[in-house]
Length: 167
Image (cartoon, rainbow, N blue to C red; front, side, top):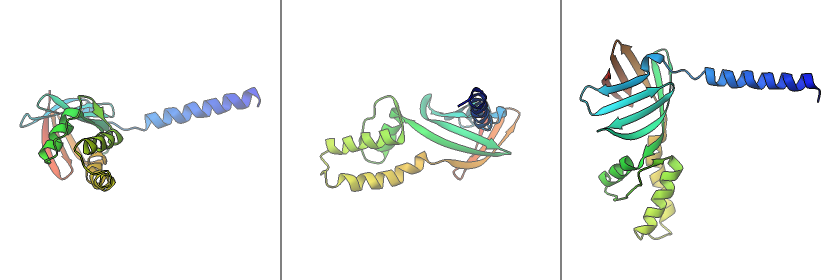
């Protein structure tokens, strides 16, 4: 392969990488920390990354993109303490360590927990399938609307509208 062709391929690759990163749309008006009007929820937006906090504890994190006044949020990781609360509220006492969990890591932890609870091994695949179907929705992207007016953010997502104030 000649030198000119190699340089051309390299230039094309760099241009495509730049285009791929430049097209992630994150409205700079969202950047920063926002607290819900009731004070219980905090959202932290940072150039395409989002964290969801409640009662001063990190719960979920993921990515977001914006276009016009539309926002798509995709939570990709859940914090162990939050997962423990979710499971206990569902009647399944399961203790998750204080670390971040992807969907596959949650499923592996649940599988091990079911074994520790004495669930017959023949039933575990069926339980995991049901669990994956229900819990997988938490890892699905959601699209809604948002509006920033001064220090106020109005966000409608997953059928709920909430107002936040920049802090």
